Length: 388
Image (cartoon, rainbow, N blue to C red; front, side, top):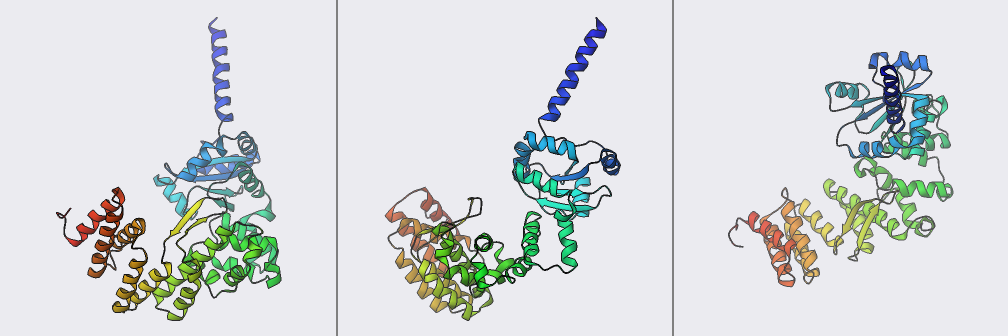
């Protein structure tokens, strides 16, 4: 009877273990030093998963893709998966060794421990399996593309695919984009693939990618002058949002550099968008990434320009004019006052008095929590804490 009970318990335990493995991606518990011998014995590749507790992208992968039966089956058959918590001491060391700067990060290694492929961020199941599959095909890995590039390959299709590889590995820079775009003629830019390429990359890290989409670049000018073509593939408001953000960002870089030629070029371009409407920038997945909502964009830019070059008389004149434009809009007055309170590095006595004027008018028009809260901050910065 005892023997039968042990057999039954063993079956239950084995089933439980099998069930647990089949409902989530399995990570090996062998030591890293033994990982590659085991992978060679089993004829599998190695995937390192870099993550940390509280990482949003990591949680998304763990709750969705890691529990997908397709992903579970594929990785169980083809990879030894090894997880690395980058907040642990060992994890920090491993992240430094492999130059991992963002999580989640997935590194694919050969049986000798050499990195052949890398992806960073969240992916759906199909994308994740595709990357893992390509990591086992020499001609489709990031490592292979880096070798080919170093060997001098500059074919347009190769450069296009290289951009995608670098993008998924979070290693993309403006040079990679520029090298591909420079192989394309004006007529070629009108092709669907290139229209979508320009649209996707118009707004990146603007300082790093500024040379690509500054308003005097051929690529910005192409998009700006081919809006009807762009509208065949994308929503009109998103095209306008991208153009506006490029102009706005370019204008502020010109202000920082005190480049009057660049500033006034952008000042002229932005007039079209100074309508008071709300501009929402969404990424390729439709997720909202930035908002620009303000009447008097042009006046705001001009005021900041004159303040930065030290012409305070002109600055104050424009600020007064700017406030008059929004004098009957409680929301905009509140927002303007709030922005002044937060701009501590450039805030002057004139600005704080202007903020007080704006917020008192905002409350007069429509008293509510938001503008009363701003009022408290304005009084605080003016040193009038007991006034309200």
